[in-house]
Length: 164
Image (cartoon, one colour):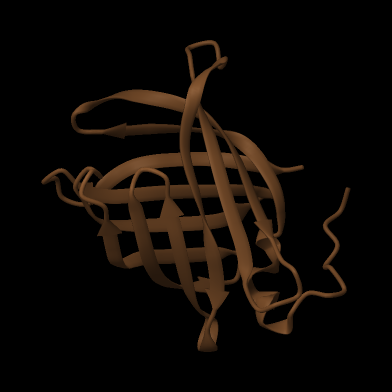
């Protein structure tokens, strides 16, 4: 089914309209101190007519056959377009983090970096992140790099999602 721009879409969202919808797919992750892993993911970018997208992501860790074995990461937040194709992203995680990201959209590509990472006293040490999203042949591709637990910024997650 072809993607149709919603009639009630706020005009400020036109640069990121390509994100709208529900996406499913899989990804891989690695980082020093943890075993490499694979996961399934569902991502939703929704709107209600106001000038922001609501973002929600949930994952399930998978085994070697691609079967879900347990819940994985969750995050939710708001992607807010600013002037001159600039973006703001505010995220919260059940693991004790809240983040403020800034970045930009160029066509069907978004790059973001953390400006602020706040964490609870029980959350693991995590200091910075970088994200890239891109629409490639109709698929949502992404990569997430992070600096945590005393390690420099490096690759952590990457995946490919298809729109429902």
